[in-house]
Image (cartoon, rainbow, N blue to C red; front, side, top):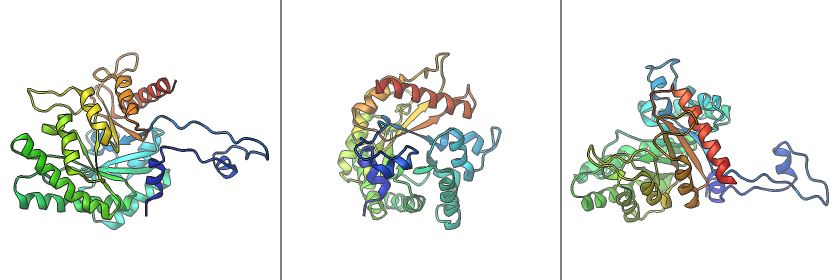
Length: 314
């Protein structure tokens, strides 16, 4: 059975009309003969990627932040959806009590858990068949944890070795195997452009097509388009190529000018690409800069996304 939250996403943010929904929004119920009022759904929603707070979570920036308080921190920024990173609870993937506490704290804050970004579990495109199978199995615990937390996806990497076409074949194989496990739990497996060939938008889009599984998609990141020290892929072309498969979007940010614009990424241009692809889901703030504190960077990115959303809505 399709999860209710997933149905709402697929429905594209449709607004339910009627007296009950009006009351739930704090509006008076329409009287007989009156037309119910609606508010247009926003072009996209805003979430917070946990990596935005990695220094506080690691205790290298003040004030230190406990992983269990991540949902509370997001709510403090008036954000009601979050994206976890597995490295901050690496040994807790199968700790049922810990996951239950994570879920409870998110629910208490009225915050939705969207996905888990997974690293350090082996190469899903490993040329060695045994190692590739082990990498798939290593990710199983995160699929199960995502299901427990109420997420819709885990984010993985399409890493491999060898010639580009062979890497694509191997990565697609690993992704399809993992997606079969995800399907058992109604969890999608989404791939981020995250260095190496995965930062080549055309290559990664080809991998997704090759995997050919309804549970396999992408998480386009605005900033991760460095293929190697010598080669960088055009970020706008890359996002355009990855958006047809997107189940989430990562709004990377580094620094801002006096007008509040990101200095390396044209956010209005980027969000036009996102919206043109028909995407109206969550766009996750992922601040990685050093000029502002993590909390200041989150606020600056959120303000910019709000401004761009308002402009594009016109």
